[in-house]
Image (cartoon, rainbow, N blue to C red; front, top):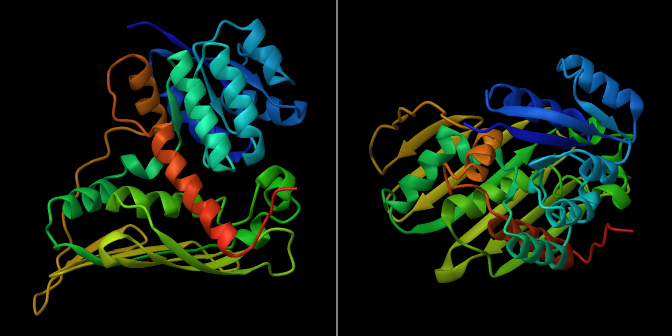
Length: 321
């Protein structure tokens, strides 16, 4: 099997997840790393034992000077569009962290560029490869709880204190607050598992004395009368993630990784789940090697961007400066 040479753009916390998962693949080599911070680059290189990888302060120089096959983009949100565009036009496949972009117009243009260049554009929504969410999606698709009548997705996180004095609370780099950041994963699951896109959104947003929104409470209306809610709370004391999918004759409850199936007047059932067989990085490499086509395409990630944008617009909130 041919070796795939990868460049990493951005060496913040999430880059370590990608780096370690890529290192588990025998046919992948991390050949170069780019980050404006020499200190952060050095720490990344040392911790992942990548002393042979070339280092750059400028990602443009990296993709020009190193013969790469693909890049993984782990930079602040508002940089994704420019960086991904430049990489695609340089003939590289791209795996970009969420959100793909901070506006639907940028997302659409990025998809057009990927299609024009004939390159893979994948967005790093890792829940697509986790057994519990694969189970939920298939269970709904098979009609095991009947036609959906309501859905609820909630995330509670200590996001506000964790991101204080970082780029995530700087709207020029983040493009938004908790909803744009961690909330992107929750929107992803809501849309991906149901296969639906809301027609209407009604939102209340709380800034909590920050430059970006911390809390958002949204009611949604989907086609065929399905209603939903999306609650993203960034000043909670811990991470807590829940989903409820109610159908005509049953419901699925997800609570921090635990799944429960309920039917009227029946005992709850906790289904057995299969083992996880891939992740966002392995899936990306398989896709560019032609070993699979089921990856998180830009066309799907556009839907996440569109709903995020709709929620901000409904709240008359414009975080990008």
